[in-house]
Image 1 (cartoon, each protein chain N blue to C red):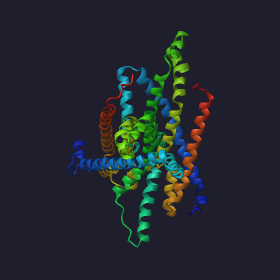
Image 2 (tube, helix red, strand yellow):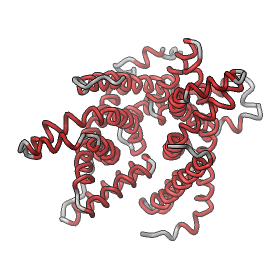
Image 3 (cartoon, chains in turn brown, yellow):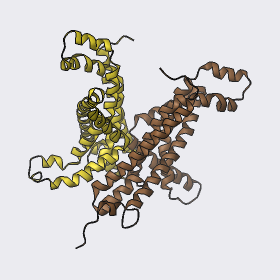
Image 4 (cartoon, one colour):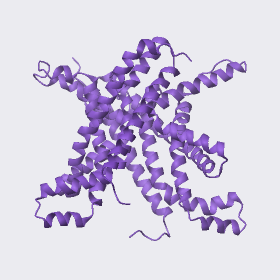
Length: 240
Length: 229
């Protein structure tokens, strides 16, 4: 009778160990989170600019977007957007006379999480921009800076210290929300773990290992965001 | 858009709402009690207790709720039958249900977030009020019960309202461990009728109404103790 494998054998990165599956799941979790985060920043920048400078209908539309995304449970949003997105693209393709395509799961995950992130990011960045003393922006305009130059030299460095705590929170929540992608069936860390656990029946071991990996991601991110904040706050007077 | 299924499924929807609300109330009430202990441990406890409370918060806030839920349901759940006598005891019908695991894991998770909020609030209570209480000869327990805790909760109230809404939005995860909550009803309708968006929409309306109810309730409670701004 074969002895049951030890925890180390089960977690080894080479088959028959499942460590490799878990690690590649962790890599796709990080990639999905990074992609969604970057998309969220782009959407957030556009949304914040729109909310602050846009015409009345644009502001109403953006208000609806941020309120709706923040009022609906993430799981429902992700599932709804996932199906709506794949249906929509295939509907568009068939209307144009193309055959339907299989939407790449990674791409869908990034877009869906990015739309969710974008709503929160809009609010974070809007608050951070509002916190910049208006005189600084007016001074930049008075020097004849074009909007793009003004944004790069004045607005961006001034908004970063205000926005970073909120942005750090959002990064933490996107790494954890990416676990919800498991429910629509794309294999990231949570689903890879479920696969490994289901195959070996060592449920506790594998879910614990996954939790430790997520915790590592969080702790490393904490350090990174901490040093980013000291970098962006350089030259600012220390709070008492 | 086809909503004719609502007439057949409304008993299920009502049952789903009850399950969701039950999960929310259980996790918020027990989580809050646990959070008071955790926050006090972090503010007043001896160093080892402080470290334990801090570690608890880091663990539960640093890992996804979905993983915590699965760790409890699949992982700890697979050990439970090995406890001698548990299978025969009257607890077994409760302990084998997904609802039990969902309630426990939501409670533990909520407590971690709430403890951070309360910790800040406990530290924000003006020193003079605590000194005044001590000057009246209150024991530490009386001081905590009459002044420190009520003041801290009052300070934290707006944040607690937000946390409860976040907790409501986390409850649909329970459907992954076979709980027939509001979201699971939408899932079942989708499987039965092949409608994707309509059940999600109906369920979303219910979540929205619950959110509105929670924010209204908290606004009402906040009005009871007026604060000078």
